[in-house]
Length: 298
Ligand SMILES: Cc1cc2nc3c(=O)[nH]c(=O)nc-3n(C[C@H](O)[C@H](O)[C@H](O)COP(=O)(O)OP(=O)(O)OC[C@H]3O[C@@H](n4cnc5c(N)ncnc54)[C@H](O)[C@@H]3O)c2cc1C
Image (tube, rainbow, N blue to C red):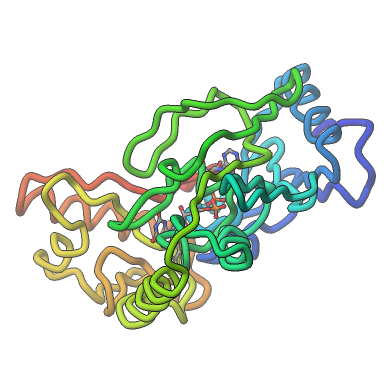
C-alpha cells in the first residue's frame, strides 16, 4: 500500500478515490491516493514527502481539461483548497490576489464587484485559477497570462512568488513539479457596462455553439496555425461520429461528449481516429489540448 505523508489528517486523504466525478467529462479510473491538503503547510509537506519517497504526483484543478486513464492514477493526486489565503483586492491599482484553487468564475465576480475590467474573456471558462494559469486559458479575445501579474508557487522547499513566466497558446512554462497556490491579476478601471455586455455576448455564444449540457472537456485539440481543429474534423466527416459511449459532438466537431458511461479508451480512440483522418486528408497534425493523466489501456 502506498505510504502517505504522516502529518495529513484522515479527511485530507482518500485511497482509491474514483476520479471521474472530479473531472468535467466524467471518465476514467481511480486515484491511488487523492490528497486534498487543508493548509499551505500541508501542501508543501506533501510535496516534500513525495520527493523523499519518490512518489509520483498528479495535480488536478477543476478537471475541466483533464482526461483520466481507465487504469487510474498511481501515486498522489493533489487537489488544492480554495481558501488557503485571504483574497486581496486593491481597486486603486487593479491588483487582485486570489487562491489558485478557486473557480475561474471568482475573478469575474471580483472584477464586477470592484468595477474593474480586463479579464472578460475568462467568463464562462470552467476550472480553477491554477488550471487557467497552467493552461494559459483564454479565447480569441485574450489569454490568462496577459492579465496575470505574478503567481505564487509551492515546491517541496516552500512557497514563493514569481513574475515573468513565459507562455504561449494554452501553455505556461511552470518550473517542473511546481504548484500554483495564488494568482495575482492586474486589471484596470474601465467601462463596466461594456465589460458586462462583452461577457454576456460570450456566454450566449457558448450556449449556442458548445454542447454544454453533456459532459466534455472543452476543445479536444488546439487550433493548428492557420486552421480550426473543428473545421478540419468536420471536413473529414467525423462530426457526430461515435465510438462506445463517446461522441464527436454534433454541435462542435472539436468537442467530444460523454453520452453516459464512456471510457477513456472510447475517448482516446475517437481522438486517434480524428488525428489519423485529418492527417491523411490534409497533412495537418492535430495536437491534443486535453491533458491525459494516469494509466491508459494499451
Ligand atoms: C465547457 C468547457 C469550456 C471550455 N472553454 C475553454 C475556453 O474557452 N478556453 C480555454 O482555454 N479552455 C477552455 N476549456 C478548458 C478548461 O476550462 C481550461 O483549460 C481550464 O483552465 C482548466 O482548468 P482546471 O482547473 O479544470 O484544470 P485541470 O483540467 O484540472 O488541469 C489542467 C492542467 O493544469 C494543471 N494545473 C491545474 N491546477 C494547477 C495548479 N494549481 N498549479 C499548477 N498546475 C495546475 C494540471 O496539472 C493540468 O496539467 C473549457 C472546458 C470546458 C469543459
